[in-house]
Amino acid sequence: MSKIVFDIETMGFPLESFDRDTQAYLLRFADSDEKVEEVKKNLNLHALTAQILCIAMHNPDTGRGRVFYRSELREEYFSKDNKCQFVSDLTEEEILRRFWDVIPKYDQFITFNGRSFDCPFLLMRSAMLGVHTTRNLMPYRYDADIHCDLLEQLTFYQSTRRFSLDFYSKSFGIESPKSKGITGLDMRMLFEEKKYRAIAEYCYGDVLATASLHKKWYDYLNFH
Image (tube, rainbow, N blue to C red; front, top):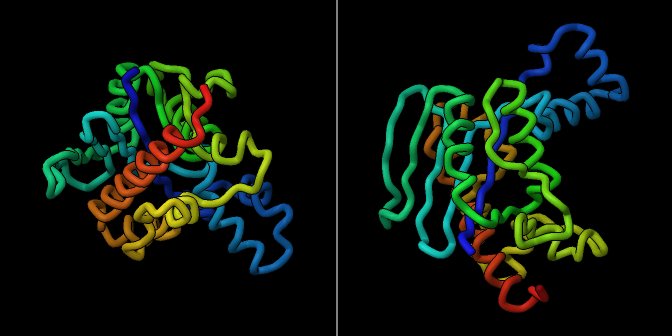
């Protein structure tokens, strides 16, 4: 069975970019400055209020990867070990099209929290931008042979507490993608500072950690 691991990085649109009625709707429960800031921070979690900056993919069987990311210039480069190709495009639509070209080639896709975040986000943003999808990323929830969402598997379909990828990685002795000092909350700062490669490499770190975590799950907790 061919497998691909993927992850996305997103950035919320500025609250001020929405019309007055939409701002009022988004802020309807924000009755303090702290809650307003929380609303602004959470804009990056939803496809209707955010955009995709990067999509990273990794084949755990071959050790090869590809990362599609937003940048001001088109460029290509490889990781130091020459196993991952980084490709930049100018628009969100372009990186989405690249993703949809690749994903049908694999039997199984692997994510961390993909069912609740990455997959619906990719589907919705593609529809909103007029990019044709090539695969159903929301198949039957309880068939891990098609979509193995590790957060679902490690919580036994949310029967137990959910933890972050960083926490699971550390707990299983895997190098955390957060170990280099970058988190998902830094995407806006990095994008505004034009550190596009930093975003791409952070996202690829997430898929490498997810791939390592999947091996732990497959070796010890896979009962299929």
